[in-house]
Length: 95
Image (cartoon, rainbow, N blue to C red; front, side):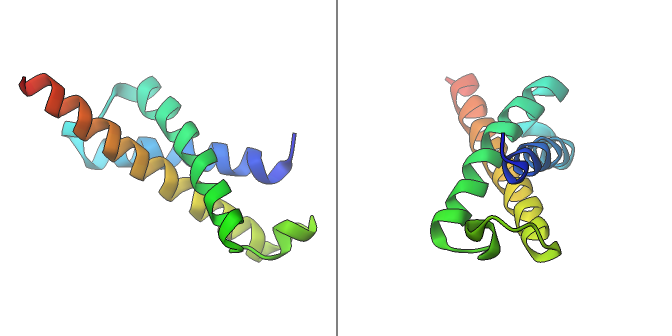
């Protein structure tokens, strides 16, 4: 497994849990936040890679800039997906 992907997944889990703590109404509990964050981290990191952000990751090298980009992409991806899933959960609960 690629080290960059592992960083993105872990960052996604952390980002999902931070978002869950900040947005109590979107929280899915620790396990749910972590799982959604992991998925969002993977998706967010891959989207950044497709956009060419984190340049050295495409070449296979791991410098500090690449690692920071992967942490940020994974964390933001996890938080965004948790916000989306939480909003959908809340909308379904109202019906």
